[in-house]
Image (tube, rainbow, N blue to C red; front, side):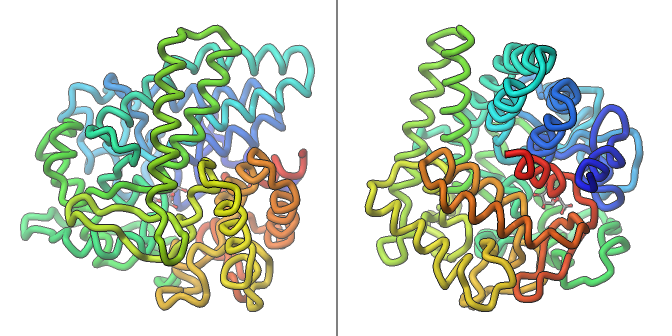
Length: 434
Ligand code: 2M8
C-alpha cells in the first residue's frame, strides 16, 4: 500500500515524476519501470505513462531522457538544453532534454502485457492496445540507436554523456570524463540537487557537474544533429550495459512483433540487432575477470574498471553455459551480492573490495533496488529462478524501512538520495505481485 501511495502521490496527472522534489519531471528509463509498477494499479494508467513519453519522441526516433512537465525545480531545465530552438527533430511541446537513456521500454511493454493478461478483460484489452500503439515507435527508437549510436555496426551502442548510461558518475566513466575539458565559455549555473540532498557525498561532485554541462554545450553547438554529435562529442563510449539492454529489449520487441503481426522485415531487423549486440557484449568480456567491458571510442581502449555493469551478459544472454554459470556465481558470491559485510544480498554498484568503492556515493557503491529488479527479471528470463527469487527477497528486505529510497548504503542499509523515489516503489509493487 505504501508503494502504491508513492506512485499515486508522485502522479501529477500527465506523468508520475521520478521523485517528488529532486526529479519533478519524467525520465525516460524511470518511466518504463514506473509503468510496470503502475500496471498493478491499473493497466490503462500504465499505458498512459508510456504514451506520455512516446509523445515526446523526436522526429528522428530518439526517445529523450527527460520530458519536462510544467513545473520548474530541476537543473538543467529545458532552457539550458535549448532543444526546441536548435534541433529540427526535437518537439516544440513538450520540451525535452537532448540526450537519451537505456532502452528498457520494450521490456516494460512486455511485462505490462503479462500483468494485463492476468487481470480483467479491460486490463487485457488495454495491454494489447498498448502493444499495438507503441510497437512502431519502439521499433523507430531501436532503429535510431542502431543507426546513430553504432554507425559501424559493431553491436556495441555508444553513449555521449554519462547521463545516457543512467549510471551518471560510475567509475566506469572516470577516464573518459578526464578527457572532457570544460571551456572558459561554459555558461555559469547553479545546481539545485545540492539544495535537496544535503550530504554532498551522496551526489556527484562540482567537477563532475562542470563536465556534464560542458557536454551539453558541445551538443548545442552541433544543434543535436546525431551524426555530428557522434563525430564531435568529447565523450563517446560504447556502453556494454546499454548494449545488453538493447539486445534483450530487441528480443522482447521482436517476439511481440511476431505475436501481433508486425511487418516481418522490421521484426527481422530487431532480431539481427539483438544477435549482433549479444555477441558484442559477450566478446567484450575481460580474459582476466570474465566481466564485460565498455570501450572508450575516443581513446580507442577498453575500460577495465570493475563495476556492476560488467555483469551485462546476464541481462542479454549469449555466453556459453559454463561462462554464464561462472558469472552468476561471481555476481552472487562473496565479492558482490554475497559480500559478508552487506546488510542485504543485493548487488552493490561497485564491489566493497574494489579500490573505487564509495559506500554513500550514488553510482559508486550503493545498492539500487531498480537495478536489482532488472537483474532479477533477466535471471528469471534466462532460467535462473533461484537467483531471481533471492534478489527479490533480499531487495524487499532492504527496502523494508518503507522509505522507497533512490539508493541504499550497502554496509548499513541506510536510505540515501531521494525518498519516495517512484521507480523504487514501482519495482517493489511488481515484485510483491509476482
Ligand atoms: C539520475 O540522473 C539525473 C540526470 O539524468 C540526475 O542525477 O539529476 C540517475 O540516477 C538516472 O539514472 C535517473 O534516471 C534519474 C532520475 O531518477 O536520476
